Structure formats: structure tokens, C-alpha cells
Length: 59
Image 1: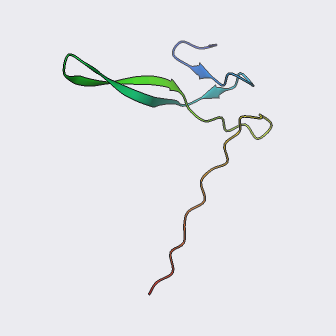
Image 2: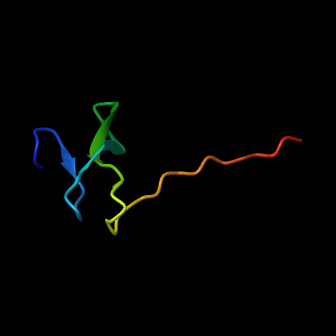
């Protein structure tokens, strides 16, 4: 982690977004567990392509 609070891709070490990985229950409340999001570096083996919008034909 280069900057304070920044999360890096475990493979290419570029900054990635922080996302909720899962939630666990503590004292009756669901608490988020944060972790690194998908990598958006096209040269990285962990690269996740942006989702294509689905086109639904009109009836």
C-alpha cells in the first residue's frame, strides 16, 4: 500500500478500488469486510474486463 488507505492489486501492485468482500454478523449487526476490488490494468493477469450492458429485445 503506497498511499494511506489505498489498496493495491496483489499481482501488479496498481491501485484498485476498495469493495465490500462479504459481511459478518457482530452483536446483531452485519458489518462489512472490505478488500481490494477488481484490477482494471489491461496488462495484469488479474484484469477484469468491464461488464458489457445487456441488450434485451423489446417484445
